[in-house]
View 1 (spheres, helix red, strand yellow):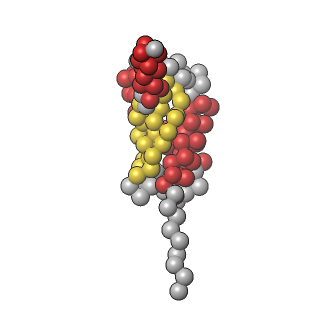
View 2 (cartoon, rainbow, N blue to C red):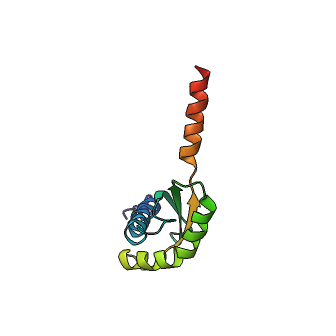
View 3 (cartoon, helix red, strand yellow):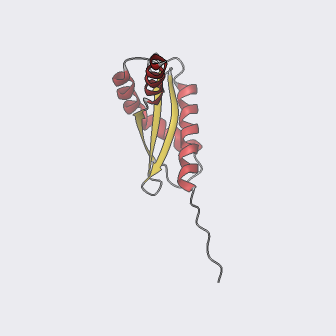
Length: 116
């Protein structure tokens, strides 16, 4: 009897698909919004049997708390619009988390340049 091959990268594919769809929704529907217009979705991770997707965002403002609160408020609307575009039986819950990788990389570059 042949072994059934498991789909080991399904989580990554679903997370990437959700990331793309949510980035498109934010770009198209919130372009005129002064708070959300500068938000970029830079990463995603699916967990819990594809029931939850954590989306990592970056923004070009210093008031990250305001952006986080606004994303939390708009999550339900974004998830509804995502469900219309996602070809799955279930629509995963989404959570937004700020990604400070770029700031940390800039600090590291500044420290390394000071060593020279």
